[in-house]
Image 1 (cartoon, rainbow, N blue to C red):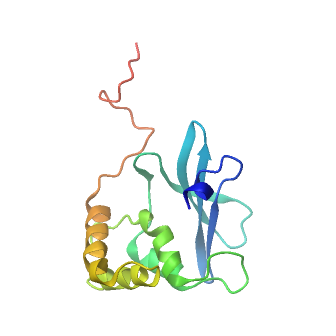
Image 2: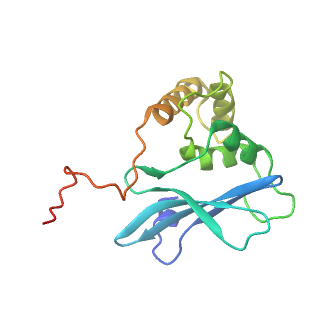
Length: 155
């Protein structure tokens, strides 16, 4: 897998189109000096995508609420090219979670997706809980925000 994700000749792109509204495109940038993941929101009928988040050591951007992640994951477009497996779709877009409060059913739904992807049954419940706690309690950071702790000095 790492050979594919870090192949400088290609940027792996995962399309997660939805049947009933916006979908997501996940782009793994892997050029020397330009590593990261971009999350783009695609809209039916539009010829362009909108970047909603990026990952360069931490997630920046707006993300999506839980109910929107589930809608996208559970409604693959029957005509558009992309990932169709609903479990894989949820796991691909899970880093976009922006809710600090998810429904009680979220750990079970995430656990089922992890199991479907091959996670060991005896650890899936703990892993789902850990991921949700991490995602719902993380600080969101926009890389364009300035900080006196960033190590750059401007005069």
